[in-house]
Image 1: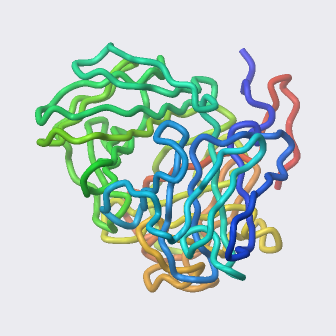
Image 2: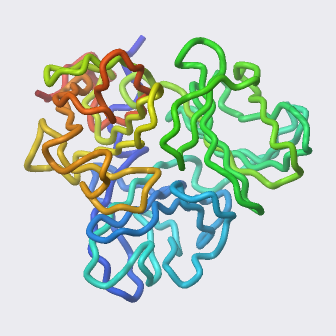
Length: 350
């Protein structure tokens, strides 16, 4: 069997950098493949403003923020993603996405071009958009106020699922069994440590969810795809010669969370650090509006850094957000290039 079925990760994930013009503009990707995104996460770099996410299942201009609990809205004049284009996305004016002269990053994932289908597998019906090759599913449903199951459509067990209420406020609940085999949860909008979650472990067809209210929901489910994505854990050792986390590819994007302490969700990508590689110095935080390297718990360019390598990443500082001794860290990573191609040919990497 081939090491990977994805020789070009840019067909499924890309990062775009741009400078706001205070009006409207279209952002074009520069990866090997043209990629129409279905999930776009935009963060201001040079100014302090919110992490905002948009997806083609909910539709353009429908804003959620990973550092807030606010319900879905249409941007309130602060900027939105106004189109999912054939090789990028468009943004409207406002500090969220397009303030004049401010710098931004847009992380993008391809799912199924906005095409959805009905899923009646679980106790609650869902509308799913799935890309099994890339191991990602987005699904919408209405909670019924009880613990119930929902079909995700991946065809195999997801490694983690992120839930967010749409019509009312509520946190970004991340549920996973990667920490201890049972279900645990974290909130993407909070620095809190992980805690046990009384849900059943997901199956190849359904996940469990209990909102205690009848609210509309969006969920994002992910599974490991060899050579393209990795969702895993490592233990911190508290020294600058830190732990190496094996991914099986050179990462393009990494997000790390200390699950044992109150520490932020730290995000790295290779587009914002082209001159520091292998060191990744430039950090953004999923649970904060702070600009690049401005969050007090992550520090500046000399703190909480990683080396991005051909088969994963290595922690190279002894700070708590990425390397507290004895703590278990959860990470999500997406590839820039696989270590070995589908034909068994090693790819170039450090």
